[in-house]
Image (cartoon, rainbow, N blue to C red; front, top):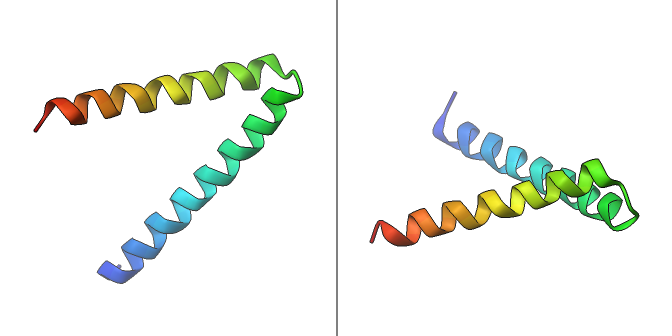
Length: 57
């Protein structure tokens, strides 16, 4: 696959993850406990990744 094709694939994957996450956030807001746990886990993971990245300067 070409570099451009890889870039488009990654953009599509990130877009789909964003859409799925937004759906989960909406479901969690309506009281879905399992979905709420997934949303919290994603937020915790994002915080951890940011902390690690900040320490690598």
